[in-house]
Image (tube, rainbow, N blue to C red):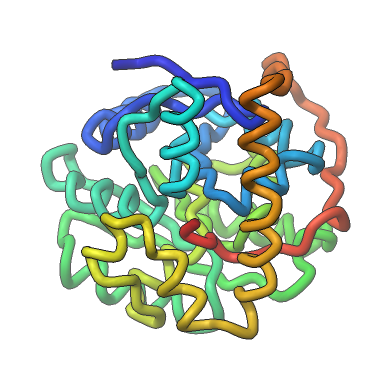
Length: 282
């Protein structure tokens, strides 16, 4: 199975977890002059994609797009473009790390989360997956994406460590925009844009119980855990998403074309259009 489903103005790969992991490891083996990257759309992403042109182009240029939100999967089935399953960014990271031993090891760099959190995640990774070498961590300061000097510093840190995989936990759409803008400069084979995954690896935040994940209720657990931060956003998304499903049923949106490669010059992304938020798990 190796097809993409056009839905909500983007392509989503019709894959199950084993194939997704294999696809990422295949990307690691490639020697291209670009950092391939993975994005994981949930309901919040879909709502932003409706009007955020920078995010639309970041999605168009992604190498692998996996449905993180169960409502996105269910909507695809309603629209007869059925996606086989939900693949969260956090689950993808866990499966990637677990597969490292069978793939000759894995070098990773953790970019994001609060101060000290990535270091905690690195310790837990070393304990649980000894075949994984966390070669670097960094928690960038607020507003770093608009600071050329800070961006150069981050890119140099990554270059010095030469990871196979850059795990990016900066929140959406910041992480997707940043990786897209710098994909020709990031010296890692693959970047995974995975929201709160670093916090979960560090056990700084707790995921929903498995039964809630399987039932598509992880969003409820996240909202109950952080109501002040998430309730307003989830209410907005719950209002907008059915409208987008209805519109998709009546008249599917045009999907942007990928940027031609090579592409040495990148326009600045519209950082001000949306605040950066963590993966919503919707």
